[in-house]
Amino acid sequence: MSKASTAEQKTQFFFLCVWFSKPYLAINLVRIDERTGNVILIAGDENIIEIYPNKKWRYVA
Image (spheres, rainbow, N blue to C red):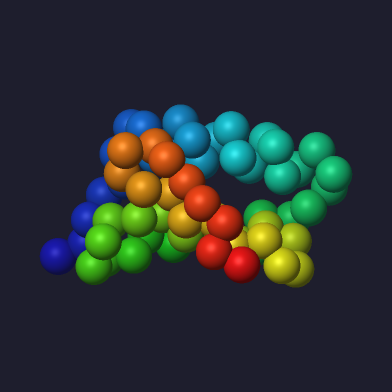
């Protein structure tokens, strides 16, 4: 069964997309990890962000 993103993740996702788009980085991929419920965001060539259900996030690479 697919997990849905939380309201906190959606809010954080929006702010991160705005932040990454300021230097004109493309948002290349958005995916929900079905095992953990984390949202994965790939922006530009090298920015991989993981957004946790509690709105916290981290750089993966």
